[in-house]
Length: 465
Ligand SMILES: [Zn+2]
Image 1 (cartoon, rainbow, N blue to C red):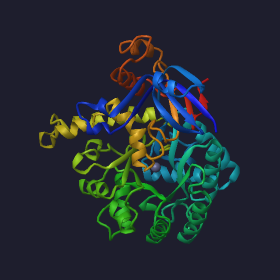
Image 2 (image 1 turned 45 degrees about the vertical axis):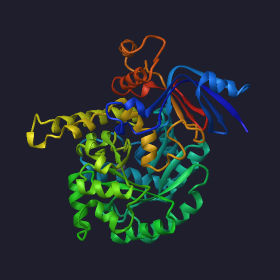
Image 3 (image 1 turned 180 degrees about the vertical axis):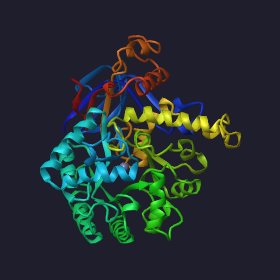
Image 4 (image 1 turned 60 degrees about the horizontal axis):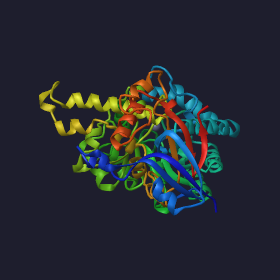
């Protein structure tokens, strides 16, 4: 048994800030001088330094000074085999997939290529402060195997699965429903719940899935009900139209996944830009999650996710945030918060009555504003709830896994320290509000240079050079 202590300034969440409108700090927890005791990677105690240190004498303590320590970021939607092709120019979703994405993903049939891709992918995540992701792989099992193997070596918690597609893609990329079922079965037996690996049954999207492929997913979920289901939903207008042509008996995009019993707890649909109010309501009832990917939605021109609608208390939808690399052009969840804030502000303008008085909805307009509480909750505890892994991680509750990121609030642009000195002097944040204000400057003025150290299961895996 190995026990270590981490001392520093800690900021995490105990509740959803959207439930505390006007008093969001009630959802957060701040220890200006805190201590976390970690035994074999799991948090044993957490609280003010004086109190926790007195109860744990003799523990070797690492003091992380002048940083704000948060739970490791959770990327709820990312594509491993697009690591090399993020930032491809000039197309919307469907032509972008054909031109830039499928040709790259085909290369992941080659084990050596996949192995290099996985290393670069996980290195990029750690450097961005991301400790857990839910990842799409490729249509070949090789990349799924390599991802789980390398994540196990690093002891990182990942959710992933063979990514099924049997239509609307190049012949050498698609697979048959029979092969997909057989390979998924084998991968579930080999990797699900082995170490920190979790398996997601992964139909890529309804536009690339025949009814037979979705039937194979339904059978897999029925035989392995504790597995996750990860896919895309309602990302782009042409895709949404195409889905209803492929599945003419379904009333809307969500209806396709409902038809095959895939929508429920542990179901994630990436994007959801064009989900109707009715679809939000059905997802909410079923406990299904949507993953908001603003960098991607802006980069591919997909549209503005209705954050204030998804968070409507009448039909609140579980939600995590994702980069969607390579539709997203950054690995950084800080960049995701930056773009999410801007999407929210555009929605705010659309709803405040200044453009169209008939659409005025001030309550929804307000819910679109991504405060630092809402933002950092969404990429930590909220993201974990969306993925149904909040029993394992997401905040610093004893019993959870000790994955965390130490942010340097003064890093980034040259003028950042001067900017932060408006909030707090050199001694750093003294109150939860000061910490939140400094974190807002991290997400809007800073960038991934603010990620100084990333720790996984109580071990430091990344330090900024
Ligand atoms: Zn995606």
